Length: 147
Image (spheres, rainbow, N blue to C red):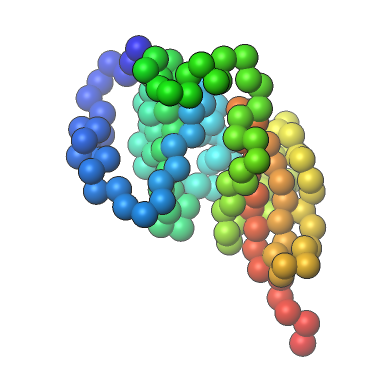
C-alpha cells in the first residue's frame, strides 16, 4: 500500500530501466528515519524521498530505500516479519567517508556503534555502525602509509 499522495520525482520504469551494474535496495520500516540516519551520520545526499521510497547518493553511487508497507508482493515480506536486525552478513561500505566523524555523529544521535573507528591491517580505518533497521554500515578511509 502506497502512502505517497503526490507524483514521484519520475515514473518508476523511467528510473529502473537505466540501472546498470550493481544496485542496492534496502527495505526499511520508516523512510524518514532511514534517510535521517544516512544523511546525519554519513553526510549522504538525498536525491529524492517520499513516505514510500527514497534515493540516496554517496560519491556518485546511488541506492534505494523502499518502506515495508510498499512491499505487499515482495518475496522478502514473509522473511522480514518479526526480524529486528536486517541484512545479517552484509556490510554496506561508504568508502571515503571519515569513520571518526561518522562514529561521533552516530554517538551524538544515539545510534548503536557495533565497533568504534580503528585502523585495520588491510589499510583502512573503519567504524561499524548499525542503523535503525539493523543494517551494518561501515564508513572507511585509507590509512596513510608509513613514510
